[in-house]
Length: 349
Image 1 (cartoon, rainbow, N blue to C red):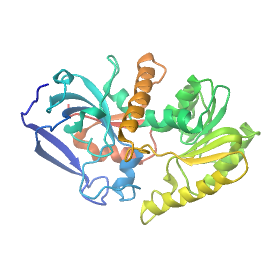
Image 2 (cartoon, one colour):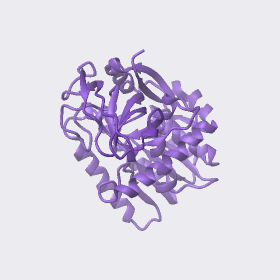
Image 3 (cartoon, rainbow, N blue to C red):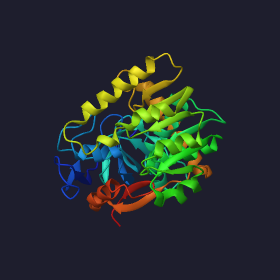
């Protein structure tokens, strides 16, 4: 084992406080040498998720204190290794989930968190499934436990998680009904889902028409009043999986209260004697008390998803590729809710 100690100059995007998308700061600094078990990654692709949109407003459930560098996940190449790390990792690409810190040209991460990216898979394509792909995979198979022949509803089928959910489900022989703005209906059909306009005031009635006996699972990132309608769609033996509260994104106050209300409602439904299940999907469940098990599960699931990307089963839905220095524009585009897939941030040309 050998260590690399040369200083690395990093360019980072800093979120200084609750600001507009044009209020991000750019800074350059020398990174310290990687410590025991750590590596320096050169960012090849990171992206904008709903988490960063909530963090900008100070409304993320596990909100980090300002100022901080956003960036939930990335794909990068190892350029330096600390003590105790295999030097042969250098020059190879890995995906890693960071929660914060990925909007940077270089960053230090734990080597134990690295998941290899298969040769031949574009870095931006791999980045789109680092969190979104694992989220979709775990909600389908570990939470809802869907099976071939089932019918599911995916709210926001044009989004990063939603479009991945659709593709994974269709590959598994599951019928998918997906909501999206009408301009995205052709793209949603191409993914294999039946599109329904989410702006239609009778959207839930339309969903019930398409599945009069109910569905086996609803994947709802919206929350708010519509969550009750999502619950009504679920048939006996099925599951409602909530994984966000987009409906309350622009409301004043802390995002914690909205999430706690969701938890409470889902818990009530889950104990009712009606043969249905309701739950909140938490990507980080188990990390605090079972870190090794969390890492193993994440690596296993992300590896599965990356292999599906390599095989062509999953097509990365990349809305745009925007340079790191224009991260504010990337955030604004993602928040516009006009795009199909995920906005990806890439190194400077």
